[in-house]
Amino acid sequence: MASHSADCRYPTEMDEAIKKLESALGPTDVMVASAGVGYPTAIDLENLEQTTETFQTNVLGVIHAFRSVLPGMIHRKSGQLAAVSSLAAFKGFPGESAYCASKAAVNIFLEGMRIRLKGTGIVVTTICPGFVKTPMTDINNFHMPFLVSAESAAQKIMKALEKRQSVACFPWQMSALVGLLRVCPDRLIQWLFADYNSSSPNQSG
Image 1 (spheres, rainbow, N blue to C red):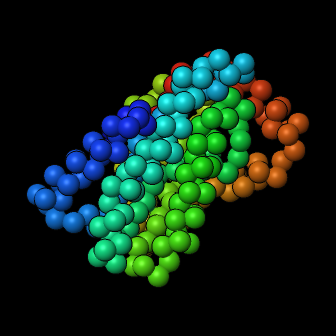
Image 2: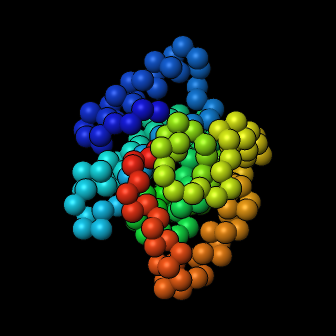
């Protein structure tokens, strides 16, 4: 799914694109919303345009994608909605406030949809990877622990979809690390991430 601004044209363009695809290929069985962008959050919050783009793509992009196929799924009483979130959704990291918050919003949105759609025949899957090696993350100038290949990530995502999991977090080492960081005091996090993302370029994923 391409990145678009969340203006009044976006839902219409998405709906029309889905109608053309379904007309040619049949009803949508699985919708995976995978578009994502991320920029370091400026300490003075002056990069507001980048922050806005982050929420438009990461959060509203998911909602628009789901909206385009959900009526048909409800009518057929069958389907699967999935979105690629991030392990960053579980902790607010310094320099990544906007990205973490956008992914947290995705998690909560999908959680609510999962509960609301229970019993309708529609499955909702939240996918939370750690760092994945792609051309977009190759530009990061900070250490990315437990980095996994794009191929490995794709396999884990496919397995989660096939198993119709509610939430899939990987790799387990990074998931455990984030779980540990969630209970660490702010002072320790500040020390650990003193130089993290202080001058890193934008990233997507």
